[in-house]
Length: 424
Image (cartoon, rainbow, N blue to C red; front, side, top):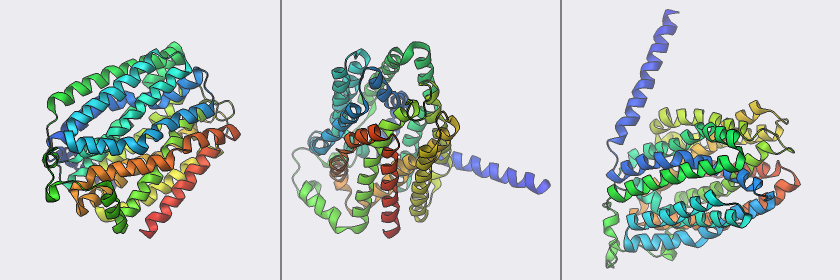
């Protein structure tokens, strides 16, 4: 008994030390990283509710699964060419102006249309506006980590991912609004909360974001030597020449192909009478429960994860996710417990993709040429979109044929990712 108490005391002391270390890393971030993460907290939490419920909202507007799959394909069409445009504009005009401009157009525009939508075409318009945010995906990535040393970037990715996981934990707030006011009106309240949060975020970023040291190397008049960013053709050649970078590039593309399937069709699967048949309000417990273990891991484990252990952590996360998808497929109708267990296991995929894999990828880019960060991330987004473009529509047809099929395909993608990681 005495030894157990001592052991528990030592374990608690180590836990407290890890928490303290995670927060101390924040002091070593660049200024923009601090502003970015702080403002992302305000907006990211309610946005998680929007992503979970917008498919259910579309179903209640009268859209079927195939049309929802087609609508989910629109952002991927934009991602084919808009990130490349965004990378060019950011190098020419600066990160901050482009970031603020497209967040305003895509974010505020889309949420306003969601707020007033009563027809199917309005929901499609909202998704199309939302898709314009693809223009700044790579810019966001650059602003998030620029002027922060590589050893501290993992804590940035962990905290940003934790913000969205916290949004998942708080999804029952949105579920309560749905239960009280119905799907349509409850979702409108969710859209309104998110719209106000986004406006505050944009005002704060406009006031406090500054030009980074690396960003200052890209004035529009600069055409000299290493200060001139490479063209996209040359950037692709750089990616192809480095096996490690190419492997991570492919893994990011495959990872992005999974999200349209799971994010679009799991909320529908939870409430579908042909699948789990859960109540729309009760379904919000699933993202809440799945976010808790991931948030704990991101707070205490991932920031302290040693570089040599990251590969094993990725493989383990992918295997957990495969098991989670199998659990969802085998869960009987009305089984909330198995739905929660499935989401808990599958959350390892989200954590691995947005934290471990992204850090691996970004650090590899910086090892080769830090000036290529925006262009490589733009190309990653574009290639991901090309590969993923038919996925939501095909997923819609698969779901209509059998609701489990989108999750079977996702499990196959994960198995391929495991194979690539073992060979890398």
